[in-house]
Length: 358
Image (cartoon, rainbow, N blue to C red):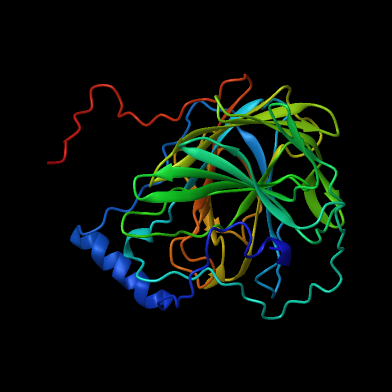
């Protein structure tokens, strides 16, 4: 991820050392087999959702602070879908976390830097008892600050980052961020029970995706927030609009519904952006897709995956990484050609007896 993202979209940084991956993976397997932890399974497949084209545009890098993983999703029919950020399968076994930047083999000296008209600042731009939104203007950013942010009658310019914070029983957490000037989002659930923090990792883009400065972006003209609906409305410079609604946030997942005013043809409508250097140094290492008509999931290393036509896409990790160890898996599913995403089929099949836990 570019250097200007590091350290500003997270409430705090914990200086910590992550356990050795092999040792922690053994602990996860032992604990799961002993019944001490119950890893969260893959989200149920949206069996009647539309299938979309999934293409891997990733390339190898040595720098852990550069987004080199690119998973593009395209369809001329999709008008709505769901994105979920869920804790990795090993979350319950983590003893320590690592969210520190790793600048090994990184040279970002050629990155562009645009100064905004306004000086650097942090401001609370909306507040209610149970949630609030904070905006940041940085000293420089890699793109000019042209997108506006509107809440009611208040319009703010030169914002590089907006954070969505929520109150919870034992404090508050930042669960969603948007960089309005290039269209990058990040989401995460509340920290697991017993933890005070979890990291961000992978980003995602929604809207008509294009290339600018060698990177994929979504060029946003305006972001408007509706507090009652907890919905962000996006107006794109290429035309068209979208809404991103915060559906659910808890200690398991954050669920977001995306609705376009019309389908996006000729270019990707959604994209995962992340980082992979090695199996032990990454923000995403694995991908699983439920391909159209398949009887099971196809699973691969994120860098070896090529393409698929799929109704469901999961991206994440099965063993801990030294980089953003607690950052969530990201799931894309429930693709629909209407303004209502297809609902995942979480309930058991009719007539199946389900044993209830004590």
